[in-house]
Length: 274
Image 1: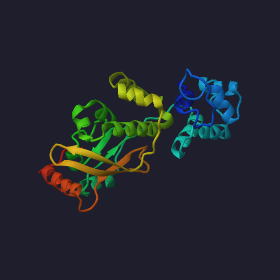
Image 2 (image 1 turned 30 degrees about the vertical axis):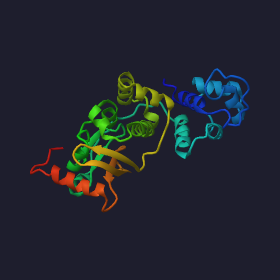
Image 3 (image 1 turned 120 degrees about the vertical axis):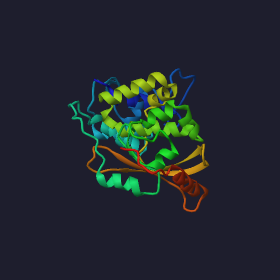
Image 4 (image 1 turned 45 degrees about the vertical axis):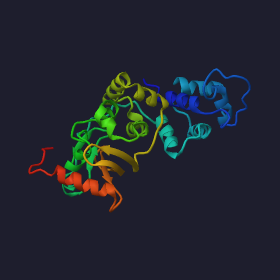
């Protein structure tokens, strides 16, 4: 059984600066971050108990213990909630659900005059409109967005700050899959990206978590040039984790005009079947 809780604790421990945690540093430290006994002292638990947590020999710590560890590791609200969820995960088999985009959302994709698409918890596109595909050819049904941004050179070239974009994307992916990290499709994707992308391997090992929320990003589009876009991610109720993503720009801005131009360029007589 995967030791997700222990791996997360170890990753966070190794990234904490001892001085910022209030630990007096004397001499040269051979290991990064905090020592296990230092974490235990700061959290108010025994060193042996904390060792059992990291080794996966105790998988059900109390909420109070986890909240104490969250304070030691200086976790924000999102990361703290993720940590709490790891201790309540169950190994019961999960039923596969058919990913069905509600008819109203499909109609919205057709009529909204903005790039919009629907993705699942693994960042695989399950529906998209023409304007979204005009922004990136990899925003189309069946394409995994995380794989594309990591491995497709043309997709990477779209992002003005690719390193920042992929860092947020990997952390968002971990938040999206949550405690279902041991699901076979997730395991296969993580193993594939770990083999093919050193950057993914490095970021995945950090165990960073960010909420699936809105944000801004910059693109350098080959047809219309620089674009400053905002992204909104809206959970779709009763769809087993589907997310509606919408890109938009400040009204009357250069990017808004670029989106209008892309829309006219993408207009064709017939829709691509979804």
